[in-house]
Amino acid sequence: MEFKTDTKCVQAGYTPESGQPRILPIVQSTTYKYDTSDDMARLFDLEADGYLYSRISNPTNDAVARKICALEGGTAAMLTASGQAAAFYAIFNIASAGDHVVCSSNIYGGTFNLFAVTMKRMGIDFTFVSPDAPESELNKAFRPNTKALYGETIANPALTVLDIELFAKVAHAHGVPLIVDNTFATPVNCRPFEWGADIVVHSTTKYMDGHAAVIGGALVDSGNFDWEAYPDKFPGLTSPDPSYHGVVYTKQFGRGGAYITKATVQLQRDLGAVPSPHNSFLLNLGLESLHVRMAKHCANALAVAEFLKAHKKVAWVRYCSLPGDPYYERAQKYLPNGSCGVISFGLTGGRAAAEAFMKSLRLAAIVTHVADARTSILHPASATHRQLNDEQLVAAGVSPDLVRLSVGIEDVADIIADIDNALKAV
Ligand SMILES: *Cc1c(COP(=O)(O)O)cnc(C)c1O
Image (tube, rainbow, N blue to C red):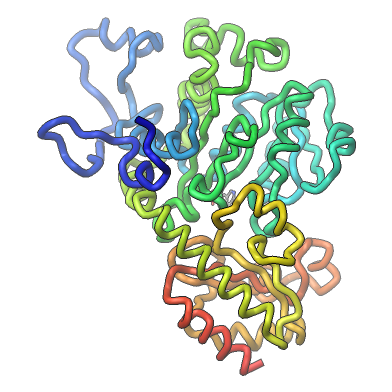
């Protein structure tokens, strides 16, 4: 029987046998013992299932990966040490020097830097396209050596909503997978595979952990993309891997297992961005309440967005679940039950007003983090982007008055009272 999302949050991934621990055990061991060398050899040859070394796989990490896989409705998943590592593996698993990727321009700043600077230095070229570009324009960005299309369900921090169905259609027309970073929506609010995405990436650091306790990432495969239909495009998956005794991932692990197996036994083996089992245990605790927290984040954020929109000192509000938002219609399609807890807004008094406002808050804390239980707030122009003048800020896509608010799961009346009070000081 297939459980519903709320049940999967609590129970998926780990099912104890009679007499085993009720709670997911932390297997704090780098290594695993075998009775014979032959037993171990079968594991090394990828002919048997089991554990060799925790850089490649660990039972605690695997259980949490299974939970995220079940939540997204995928066929295979793996955990990584950070969201950045997950994004890197997602691309590097199918693209090498000389290849090309098309990517939405509205993505997390760290991912943008990873793609546009670091991976470019590795010889992989990225073309950035507007998430709102029409089909004909998206098509123009593709080249014969393009290996993937990439975007974020709800972009951090732009808060644009990706037209996943259109992006999937375009990717598939060019014989490449659509990779979607589903961090802000989480599988509670959107499951990109249901709209045609092929691979999902997560920074579990945000809502999945939800308590600002552990950095982590995840990579999930839908099992839908037919790598063997394009053997010349994806030779790493469809032809022998000399670093693993000539294994052909699509042959040995099928369409549902090839991509994640390769990312695990090749990229994780060689690059080692592996989470500690203790961190995965903490992530699992977060996941157990993800559905409850997301509902509360969304309800609180909508109430706060409505309050801000009605306030005369507030010039503009961006929240995709708020009627009138430019992405409201798209959010209703892809995120009908709620989007996330992150809002951005500007004050009529501009940059100076935003600075005064920030000084007067008591409940909302000034931090760079978003998407955890505590309400947090950031005025980029006076913090992360303070070296830029107003003109440079606009060029960077951050208006001088922009305030980013990550609405937590406290009592919404207290959150609104705090904001109301700070607005009086402006
Ligand atoms: C934070 C974030 C990342 C990067 O994840 P880390 O866990 O910080 O490495 C990637 N994508 C999105 C949408 C994010 O918000």
